[in-house]
Amino acid sequence: MLTKRIIPCLDVDKGRVVKGINFINLREVGDPADLAMNYSSKGADELAFLDITASVQQRQIMLDVVKKVAKKVFIPFTVGGGIRSPEDIRNILLAGADKVSLNTAAVKNPKLISQAANKFGSQCIILAIDTRKTSTGWEVFTCGGRIPTGIDAVSWAKRGESLGAGEILLTSMDADGTKKGFDIELTKRISVSLNIPVIASGGAGTPRHFAEVFVKGKADAALAASLFHYKKLTIYAVKNYLKKNNILVRE
Image 1 (tube, rainbow, N blue to C red):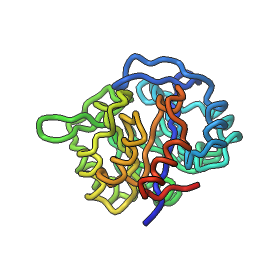
Image 2: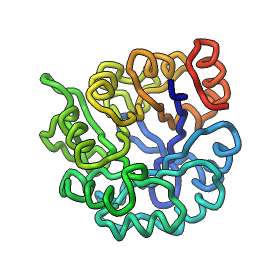
Image 3: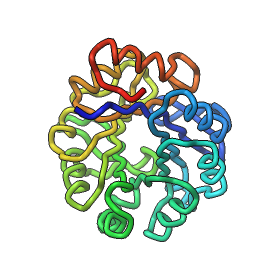
């Protein structure tokens, strides 16, 4: 059994880390490089950096900020936001990222997933899926959760895997920032449908929530933001709880 990963997330707007609830009412948290260095030294298995307004503002990701963060971390580092082409991916990897996260551009041009996987390897291509529950399932949203697409999230995850994505970053917009727990039903539905790892995101509030998403939701990794930013929990506290409940985690 592979160890489960704990991944802090830096949602970045205008070069600063922010956090909201259900993707709205954003509040500034701090400097991305300082937060990244702190998480890197305090038990994080990986780090995610998402420029949450790059796509909706139709601009490039802030490479200078990515470079500053990359210099401070010694763990795998994923970057997403505003990526539109293989050249964008190349620039982000050269800036120090280990993986890239594709969302809006992949929905608009699914071939980008296969182009990126063929050029850089599936292991560094993550398909990010932001989704809300509907009466019939879960719908994919783009542009930082602003635009509904009519695409079913489970079908899109399967297609992403077939096109070469190496992982899925699955965010429940309904649970985001609520601290009431991950969407277990959604996470399990997608995890059991795929052969690639699924990173659960949205709703972490207690160590038990992490255990639930790993055991019941079948996730391979869990991502959290405000929980760690506001020091409600430490990564070590989460890992200790998981170990006590016989869930394998990295030291």
